[in-house]
Image 1 (cartoon, rainbow, N blue to C red):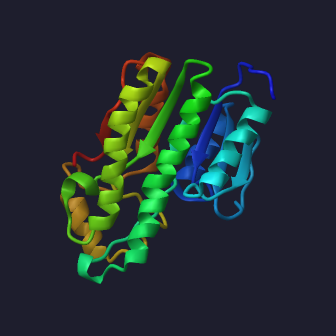
Image 2: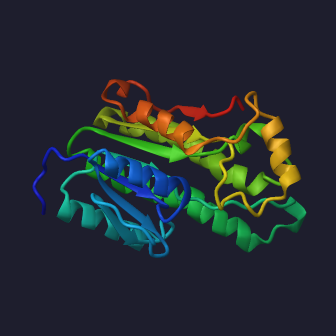
Image 3: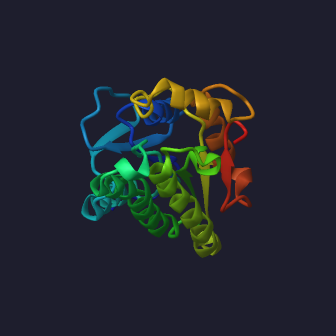
Length: 236
């Protein structure tokens, strides 16, 4: 097992592209050791970044990620549960298989990573976990039932988990971004995206930098008294 050292180690799920790729590159550029994962190989590399092939909804594969972290780094300072999939469809037209797929990735995947991260962080009595939700939860838009329900489960889970692991020195919070121009939303009809954007107090798409700003706040050493919260971007 690797010796515990002063190098800051962060796990970010879903780093092959989009917001996960941006966050991984940003933290690696700041000198963090970044472990990322996705179900497919990443087509990019960076100093201080290691990419693992894993499906976060598979308990065996998640356990393998954390065995690797323990063996090679000996610690984990932060975990960002960015991996997720979206499904926008009328409930009456939604197959059960689509529901299961969304719930497995968005909720079960978050649960598994949180559980294993907390088990590792408790040994150092410190750590930050950030889960990802969406402004679709409070906006209650038609066609978003399954996706929003999966993220609503993440929010409730975060609040209860915060109480369970707070005494261990670990905080867990959730960020709910407004839509960001990534592959996650590019197959959604423009009129539906316009309706969502117009429901926000600040009527624009979110940016990677907007998300990073909240993450920086939540993982800051002075934010150790902030836990169990959900922060929505854009004024949902």
